[in-house]
Amino acid sequence: MRLMPLAFFLLPVLLCQQAVAGQKSVTLYLDGARVEQEFSASGGYLELPLPDGFAPGSLRVKAPGGSVLRVELVPAEQDRRRAGEIARLRERRGELQDRMDALNRREEIFSAAARSQSGKAPRKTKANPDPVVTLQQGTEFALNQMEAVYRSKRKCRLALDAVERELAMAAKGVASARIWVTGSKTRVSYLVGNERWIPSYDLRFSGEGGAELLLHAKLQQREKGVQYQVARGTTAKPGAVDAVRGDFPVLARYPLTVTGAAGAEPPERFAFAPVEAGLPAGDAALYWKGEYLGSAPFSGGGSTVFTLGQ
Image (cartoon, rainbow, N blue to C red; front, side, top):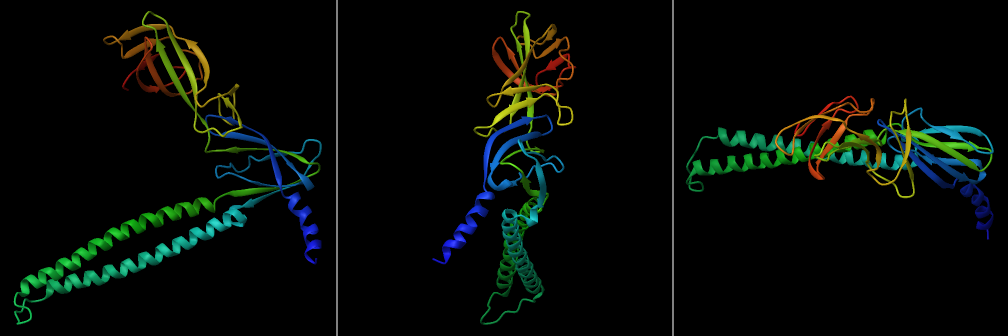
């Protein structure tokens, strides 16, 4: 019975810290992405985990129907989720360092043994009728042990370097945001640097004078239930924004005025009038009479030549 008052006391606290995520949208740029999402949190409090690619200084918070009272950014080392991972990685680093110390000691021992064997003068006895063979065997054993130690040290060093990189990433930047608002709705947006769209082109030649350039947005990954948009520019200068579906949507089509073609059919080099200025550089796939011939870098809107294999 004594537990009942405590349960009633903790229930509102737990509820006020539980956020319900609403509609999420991601706008992809050439150099990053902006994530926007709505949350519903009772009690006017929200604790929001931030992704590893979060760009410092990019967080924006609104409270529709209310106002934002306070926003507190929690460094990675002070975040409960990250703290456990950091502790695990530090323990792993310590284990690997101990392993490396033990291997260094073994290397010293076998190195000394090899020197000792090579410095001995052969002496024939009843117990050792062929001292030269015995010395060779002892030296080879020590050298083989040293080779095994070198292999183990190399593996240990690679593992230690990987843990150091993981630890540096885990302890880097901001891990979460604590938000206090009036009202029950919060709209959050921020930039991430590890998501973007990649320009990709199709150069399609009919073989009868007609040609077309297609600009695709190659998306690195798509999260289910998220609305995606693609901006033609950067996070600083977004440009036109298009709502997209699929992981390889067509953003634009441009007619190409072909001025020349070189090489046996199918040609490998095409000259054409420049298309819309400002198109970003990217890889382009070449199609001739509907047949795919390969891909090559394409310099974008100012380009007037495309050569396969370069």
